[in-house]
Amino acid sequence: MTTGAGEVFLVGAGPGDPGLLTLKGKECLARADLVLYDGLVNPLILRHARGEVERTSRAEGPDGRRLDQAEINRRLIEAAGEGKTVVRLKGGDPFIFGRGAEEADALAAAGIPYEIVPGITAATAAGAYAGIPLTHRSDASAVAFVTGHEDPHKPQSLLDYDALAAFPGTLVFYMGLHRVESICDALISAGKAETTPAAVICRATTPHQRTVTAPLQQLADAVRSAELSPPSLIIVGEAAAHRDRIAWFERRPLLGVRIGITRPEHQAGEAIERCVDLGAEPVLMPTVDILPPSEWTEVDDAIARLSAYDWLIFTSANGVGGFLGRIWETGGDARRMSTLKIAAIGEATAIALAPWGLRADLVPESFRAEELAAALAPLADGRRMLWARADRGRDVLPNQLSAAGATVDQVVVYRNVDVEALPPATVSLLRTRELHWIGLSSPSIARNIARLLEADGIGAAESGVRFAAISPVTAQAAEECGLTVSVTAGDYTWNGILDAIVDASANQGGRLFDSG
Image 1: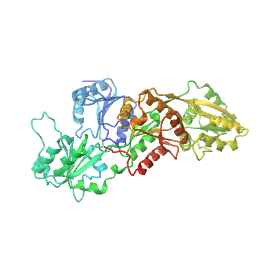
Image 2 (image 1 turned 120 degrees about the horizontal axis):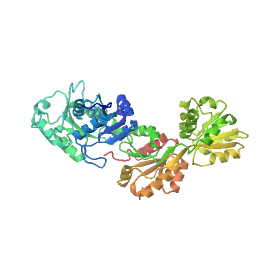
Image 3 (image 1 turned 90 degrees about the horizontal axis):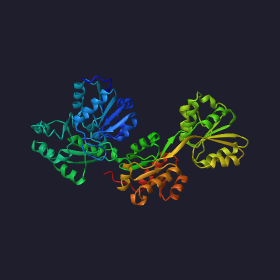
Image 4 (image 1 turned 45 degrees about the vertical axis):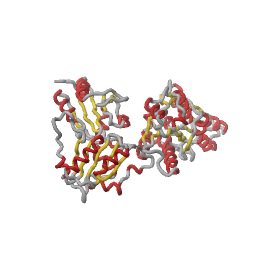
């Protein structure tokens, strides 16, 4: 028996949409020293993990070596035996066709403490996202979950198709795509009506969800024509006919569109969530890392003499976090600001002040340095102003404010460090023309993207990718380094970028890309 102090959580990750992870599952990920996740788990869920993550797969692939179930069990036992808190993150629900029981048996036999955290299983989520109720007061008073892929080592099938054909409700077959014809034939041979409504849903709850509906006798032909791919579920029953009236998910405006998110990963949450809401697939491709300054001497000196300034200027949320975070780390708090007025370049920067108990006194209508300088200029003569800034950027503010009579001091509160290469998965999407848009949220990011594409030998035109700029200044920088900007945001935020992409889609009469 293993006697280590570790424990294992068998956590259901849900079927694909990262928002379907349970609160308990999120809490477990935040506690885990090690996360072993299945190939069906959406990698965006791993943003909630703080420890090491390791992909397991029962099929050979480019993202990881093949591990059989016995090896996965051993890995769980060994890690917990070393005293680690381990999350085994599984697609859907661990106990519904997920081999969770096998893993729990192995842990119990080894004396490892464990806990089961249920997840939303694929059947209920797929039905809901495709507009197919699995139960209905008029059509289905029961639902049965059935494996479409039994253990090949069983001496005989445990499925009774006579009973399934007579079942008074909805049948849901998991993992049955490659056997859809034989499943349909078996049900019909056992007495199920050929005209029974049926559907196949592939890649449910993801931006690439596709649904095919047909009478039971014609379903296999419809699936072949649509060239569906796993993971998929087969739904058979009268309730499937409701899809025509209540389908909703596949009507989202950017369904199937892949959008490159160029923000640093720890700051990409809002853009990721908005992409998911629109039906798009966010592709994380940060071009810069945000780091603290090399040393804090100048910042600390400025903090010590804050009372000498009239205005404190922020031009990014990173600037807010860097400067106010340093005040907190050195024993201060918001009371240091009692004599200051605060200017923020835009709404997002102003919002970043709120957690510190502060409000901006001035926010220009247009989120540009020129507009901020123009708004401050009438208040500048004879005033002392402190700008908490990045280590690089345009000098519009100090130049214009100095010309208006202000004394402007600058302190670097964070550094932008360029990444050396795009993620391999992103390069692959570009080469296969499967990345549809890249959002450019600053001039430096535009220049970085141009540099990184050139380094990988990727021509933007050949890749088919389109660029959306956050502002005219960013669009100009992109054009200067050879990137053709298709749309520019009206609201200079990531929401504005995504709104511009939605508008471009609508102007072309619908979604820009097939979700296939």
